[in-house]
Length: 162
Image 1: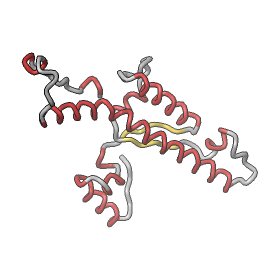
Image 2: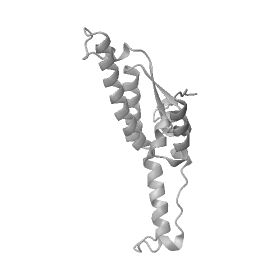
Image 3: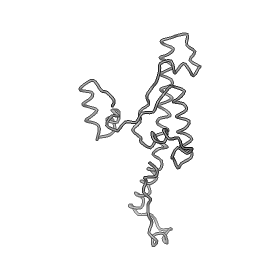
Image 4: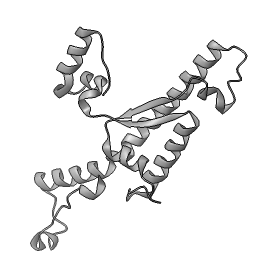
């Protein structure tokens, strides 16, 4: 993903005017570049919180089903079996599936966070799954382009991930 981000070119004349305030177009380009660079890191934080919730839910359900289960042991979360963790962030999914040392991520801290998140998922018997945005029904609560899909599924009452 990060390798597909287009560089922002600054013309020679503009570089010589470094003290000048950036105009609206320059600011917009810069914000777009920063946002693209930070997107995988933001997605890691979101998925880390979701994985922590998954851990809690799996341990809670395991102890409900077996009150003698030790909730402090990591294997308690694996009792319920494999848990798919869905993402529509292709950059995060690709990095998590990567076997390269840096996970194909240029930002080292993000690569470390992805490795830690993947290790936490393995401990929970979790597995990464990618899906497109139209399969992420909760996006219908915040994104206009998938709102109708969300409404259709609610009307039908049944949904199968593909």
